[in-house]
Structures are given as structure tokens and as C-alpha cells.
Image: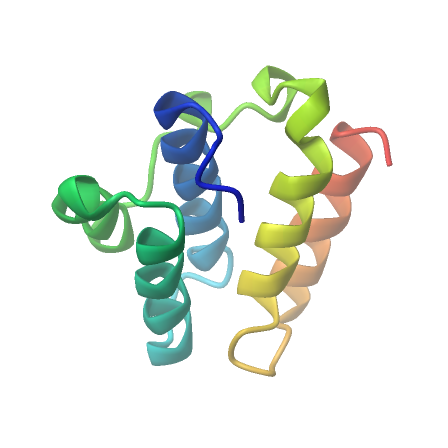
Length: 108
């Protein structure tokens, strides 16, 4: 995860990751750990409270519009979301469906 992305894009990435943690309506410990590690890797410590808030209350759907992901970052976003979905080593059918739809919307 490149910390060289503009801060707004790093926050957008985290918003997507957190929204996918909610796909099965339950945040797993492994997903929390994954998010915490991403916060560190992306240099978003100062935004930790905001990001962790997305694990308490999911971002609104209009805040995670895949069409707003810059084309040059789409693979990065998809890889990060895929890693989150697999963090607990159990892929719920709702998570799989959401991931497949996200992939389609990003045109992969």
C-alpha cells in the first residue's frame, strides 16, 4: 500500500475497506487488525479515530461509489478490499457477492 497516494485517496481507500468489512454485517477481529495495520502502512495515524469510526458505523453507500475511484488506483483498491475480505479466512456469501460486484464496477 503506497503511502505516496494523496491523503484524500488513502482515506477513500480506507472508507472502501471499512465498508467491505460490513458486507456480512459483522466486523471480525481479524478485519479490525487488518484495518489497523493499513492505517499504519498508509501513514494515516492522525485519522485513526475517523477510520475506526467506520468500523462502528459503516460509511453511507453514496460515500463509497466505485465509479469515483481514480482509474490508476483501481487495482490497488480491489487488492486491498480482497485482502480485507480474506483477512478472517472465511468468505461469507454476501462478502463474495459484494467483492464480485465491486470488481465488475471497476471493470476488471
